[in-house]
Image 1 (cartoon, rainbow, N blue to C red):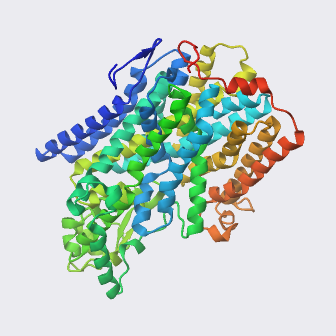
Image 2 (tube, rainbow, N blue to C red; image 1 turned 90 degrees about the vertical axis):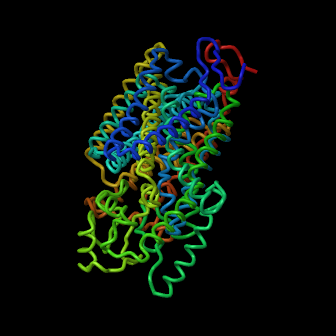
Image 3 (cartoon, helix red, strand yellow; image 1 turned 120 degrees about the horizontal axis):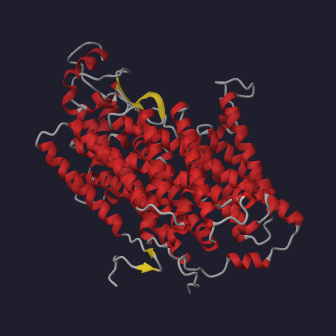
Length: 634
């Protein structure tokens, strides 16, 4: 049979990776058609409306088109999805969950957080592929909560595991709905709260009918849109400026040499270079030690993230989980490793735009300021993405007034204040590309954020359907009952997250970081020990996870209310470890919770001294079985 053709195993369709290629090609065609429309005089607002509608259709169609009432199809996609497509789906969720649009700004400013945001998530997927994912796939567990049930038994540990998985998924889902709404408000004519509500509805429309297969396909489509929109202009600029159409290797091509010359001139004039005018990023790391700790935090967090682990269950064989992870690393790396080149091209474009320009001419080469200056950061509500002379400017007249009222005021880097997020979010506008590239980049960023939200919603649902709630309250129930529970909890989880997103936006990155902290301190050690250490005890794992949950909860209370439990006085926890005080509080919580959790898991297991159940371990380590026929696969 030809490579890429559709085949059948039993009554389950094998979903090939050709879908991802088709999605990328369709995105290129869409960009070309929109360019023709722009040349023909199509209103820019109409283009943004059409692109926003495309995102909605792209997520609603997979769920409704591949709807199913079969538990094996909904929960496992019948284990019939090609490794490359699973990898593309994981990559789509990973670039959103790791906030990869922050990386270009960090490289722009020279922050140590940039390499951490690139290396950490990729390392996390690699660790998951080696230590955890194949064993979850072999055990038949839909989620980490189900694996604790199958591997350790009992009632307490599965219930604690279910609670930790559900809470981590809910926190990450909350963040992704907030960010999806904020991103949509940046690019499309919709209010942030309304967009968050639409994102929640799309999550239910995508996952509730189609389950894991709809999740994989919609996430792969989202990745294809973002990768095409982000990489296509970078490849073109790299080819023109450096002769090498690979921005990951050219690292900005000749842009770096020109930037060096310009910044040498600025030094002679006692003006700060652009990298020093950036405000502090939501995730900062000012030194090598902080960068190393942030990298380890992200690596362990994503290695045990339920939203990523559940997707590997769609692979056809146990042995194909690692190739799926390898594809995920390749696809994700294609985007995040281009961040340094994007930063270089943007910096050069800004320098070329402001040198020799006056405030009365701001709309000529620096017109992006008039649009992006009025917009808030999606990760810092109330903080403008760009300021000119300390003011928000939306017109030439406002720019003149902001800089003293003189029409001949010569612009310089000293007049600008930028947030790092603008480099990744406004890259097409900053390098003066046609508006269609900004439209499609916005669509890709919103789509991948929706993909991460869908994965979190699915992880939340499967934690209940196959975890302790099912074993304790529905013992002996049919697989259809599990499917009903999963869909019910999906709707409940999305509803709660949507309410939080629309009423408690705050600092949206904080819930996601606490979700990763729970993965680092509770799920990562529990899964690693349960998989690799035969003597791991149920009580030890339960105690360790409970302790990690308690420490993270205490850190959140203190960072929010302070020791006096008064809201707004919670700066104390961030200074517990002054040598890495710039790292967010959840990272501090993980640094304390991980050793405590691990010590409890190992110590109690050794103290109890119980021998492992050989029958249970043999059952978990049995050869893989075909989902459709039940036959052993060699």
